[in-house]
Length: 335
Ligand SMILES: NC(=O)c1ccc[n+]([C@@H]2O[C@H](COP(=O)([O-])OP(=O)(O)OC[C@H]3O[C@@H](n4cnc5c(N)ncnc54)[C@H](O)[C@@H]3O)[C@@H](O)[C@H]2O)c1
Image: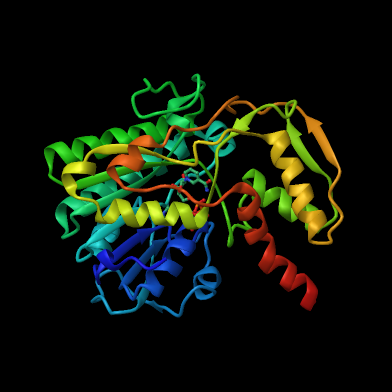
């Protein structure tokens, strides 16, 4: 990734053992930044982190090192979180209840994790030394609106997940204006990329099923749309959000996606083509019931991020899918 402006600031990453966290940490390690990961290991694992970098597991009140540290803890443990984050410079808050279906099944759990957990992380920033706070939001707060989604749309979340992410954005705004924490809320599109084997999001799930020779399922008739963003583009946006001048970004929300609308049916075709090119039998495609809380159309206008973060995605869906398949094919070939 290489981002000289990130210097050697101390990066504190909640949820750093997960999909996006492990991709982010890989780039920070390449930049030589001190990193502290805070994760309760309910989804992410020590093994996932170890696959990216060597690390030391430490207590929350341990001194920072020049390398990568892991503190095992929950964002709902306010005091532990504050102690662990105390001497960090940049906080990237990724830990969350990440799924629409989970939030529909248990809205209380989703609220505790995404609202109280985000408030706890903001409090850790306020009482510690971190100036910059980056919040992983989503397209979900906007809801079922006419796309492209942009930052000026009045949010109308469909699922509890969208409501809890919207509350997180609201607290970020309040902490920027009342407590002088430089918050930046990034509304990620549908992220795909390496290290996503555990995810149930569409690209990760379909690749897993295809490699097992199983059929893939499309919820609804395949015309639902999403905006698929590759991990390297997303990580670049996080770096830019961490280094942009405060007057451009503090208290702001940014759509971080590609501005391309892709139907789920098109995604299935592109993936089948990529798999066939790679010598793997394309999976059978089945259509099933729509899911409660799913949004029909979703893609973003990213012009605000282009202007204020000087950020633009560069990876096409075709290229990104091939990048995800490459290491898997290598693994398959060597089995
Ligand atoms: N992946 C996407 O497409 C996408 C899209 C939009 C927004 N996001 C947001 O990005 C962030 C990261 O998503 P991801 O895809 O890497 O998810 P992930 O599930 O792979 O990673 C989340 C990590 O957070 C940890 N975690 C969960 N609850 C915790 C808690 N209470 N305390 C401490 N750690 C906890 C998990 O163990 C896991 O390692 C989330 O906030 C998610 O809502 C992701």
